[in-house]
Image 1 (cartoon, helix red, strand yellow):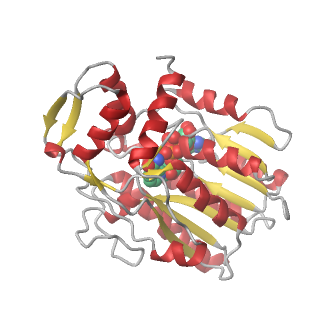
Image 2: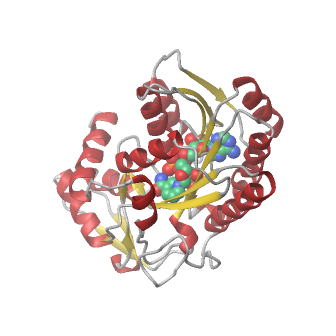
Length: 325
Ligand SMILES: NC(=O)c1ccc[n+]([C@@H]2O[C@H](COP(=O)([O-])OP(=O)(O)OC[C@H]3O[C@@H](n4cnc5c(N)ncnc54)[C@H](O)[C@@H]3O)[C@@H](O)[C@H]2O)c1
């Protein structure tokens, strides 16, 4: 390893954070991990993920809320990282309709707290933060590219993610902080999220209970396997952009799939037929997501490799092992 880095990762007990930490440690970097271990979904998988990272002298964990600005500044100044990978957020789309205030606390106040801490920590050379494909709302001009208009969010979650991008833009402008916002497109894989469809469908199909299918299954998602997301994150985290500006990249599979196909692939990986119950389109949901990858391909030679046919069986195998089925 040429240049081992000290990196703060927020949301480290979460799905993407856990994989990012494992991969950064395996690459030879040191990580200070932050998470508040909230119970939006069962916190047991969060502690299991942390346990699975294992003891490593290059790794330490702090249970802290990113919106707790004093503690965040204190941690940043003592640890003196050169990178921050900020993934902590309330991440569910539907829950933002039921519980809007937590989204403002974690995603808006939390993001501001990170921006302020970064600006007061001179060792930090690059802030990388999570945005989302949901900022594209129901744009019809697919594939979605980073230059498209993104001012019609259909959920509060999407609005907070777009607000984060704009706050970052202002901080780069004001304080010349190099930043990169990553618009992730439906990420799935082992150690994934219990609130997402691939998890609840797998659970229901294995238990022979019905799955909820919205809008007659006429939805398309650009699924992205976790390893493909992590290859992009590592390249971007190791880099320091030349311009001290706020850049945005799509990270997707760039191959949207229909919900019916998705259900068939999960059913066949589970070896059982899905029992489908139809429901109307849900509030906050979008019809289609589809990433244009031109920009990240050009700058980071990013190339997603794992199709649903390969990735879903990997998830289902992990799910069965984890639940001892
Ligand atoms: N997984 C996806 O498909 C997807 C898609 C688009 C964007 N994203 C974004 O990527 C990031 C990571 O998502 P994920 O799928 O790993 O979600 P996740 O919910 O598994 O992980 C988020 C982690 O952040 C922690 N957290 C939440 N609020 C916090 C706070 N105020 N302080 C400290 N920790 C806090 C949670 O406890 C959780 O462990 C999020 O910002 C999410 O919005 C994810």
